[in-house]
Length: 150
Figure 1: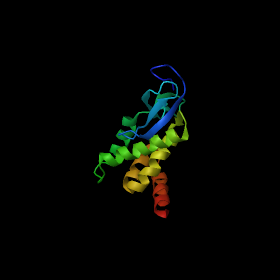
Figure 2: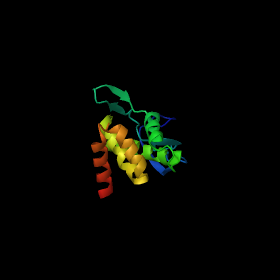
Figure 3: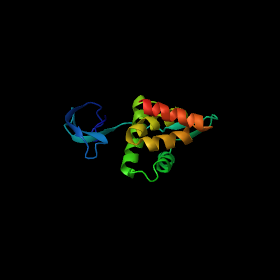
Figure 4: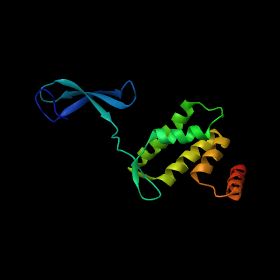
């Protein structure tokens, strides 16, 4: 970090704490050459997430698209938007914590399903029926059996 006054690239950290929004770490620094104090912020680098579709196409991760699927699966269920937002946050943070920039659409759907199963099992089955594209009643029944066994 270069001092804004003299350009020296050596400084010492005087104070460090999370920012008010907890999105960054705020550091007060002091230049070792001239003694000027200045503030820096460290933030996690937000790499763009790309979803690789089944046909090989790539498209940017779209929170709203995931939300639309969840809203459709939770119609007439007692879930609020904040719960769905938190679910999507968990998926997105999980991907970022892995350090990946691309995710297969199948993996993304599974991450959503795992979290949705813990929130509402009926919504889970609804989402799974669309996401996994059940071809007949037997596939649907098998999913229900697996869910009941857990």
